[in-house]
Image (cartoon, rainbow, N blue to C red; front, side):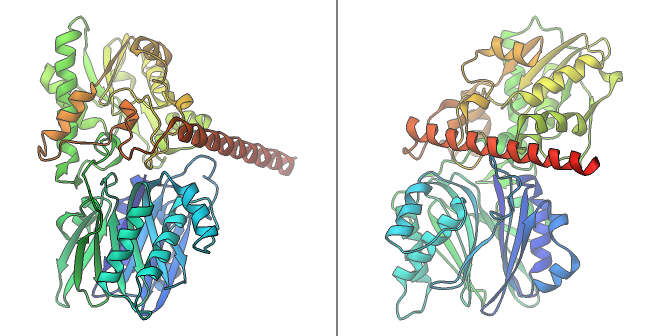
Length: 506
């Protein structure tokens, strides 16, 4: 999960991109980057950390130009300390190109070999985004006529990318001296929207992962970029679009609506907030039908993404809704933190239970999902320590039993608490008195109710059905081995740093 932005403005783009990244900060806290274009010159600033930490006043002044792209990145296994993979990435041949990517290429290893042996291109990091950039650069070279680009050649290059790349990708890129390019994979797995704003100087365009970025920056949402579609906005503000894939189908990632996206976003015509209200209703109906014996005194959400579901559940069951946890908003999202120990520690720093809402009560805790179970276990224990008589736990999402290979950091089955366990086993693992999961069919209906036009979703983490059709058991074994190696390396680095700190203290 990452956040991407692209803007063609009538004045300096740097502040728009910075403000947009702040709005998309929830999509990644590991690294951030902005590149602006001034004529044929790119100006870049990127680094590790939150947006507010990466950019200083001097950096913003250096980001000159009316066009730019920006990116926030979340950590993948073993790379949390690496800033080499901070985006956007840059190549200078056959044109100066910068690119930011949200998603994951499932055939990145194969493409890397093709780039080296056939395309004579070198990739300098382990990032599939750099692979994608070089594939795009090569396809642009193939489609160029007389060393000049036009929209037709650019769209032909994107068609070439679609033919070669597999997996999920939403992309913003800039081509020096030409303009801004944005495109989405043929399955439409990761979100991408665009909007415009009328100014006295002319029309401005903004492309973003979520519509909330458009709202806060004063842009009007035009529509989503369609699966397989590419849009190109030249330096003069002329807008072009074309379908570049042979057989595109829309299969948005359903986990975006469960957890990843902000509730005030609308993606593929679906309000995230409304879907979460519907999830609460479905959970309430399941409790009414199958768990009438539960004596629930109060419903308490795990802030923040589960709040709409918990509120609607409480209303439908006629139960009290209370805020039992106070959140420290200066701690990153625990789901995307590398390492179990760091996640466990961060839960206590992030949430504090108010005993007045727990003492002597049977409480129903509602969370958006249960992935590794580390956070859920700690939260149940916190509720018990605050004096709860019984602690029931409800998940607005079904059990996460399979790795996600399309850009969400949960790739190993060993890390997923639901893999190889039934609901009773998971309930015991997290220490709850009862566990209620959402049903997958109900979740699909909850999202479909908001936009009935969309009937298919990417749900692989729940059912193991990978929409791109190229994810094999062998592939999963490889990425799990790579992740385990990355985790081992990260732990070794952490241990070495601890030893150095102790030596320094002595």
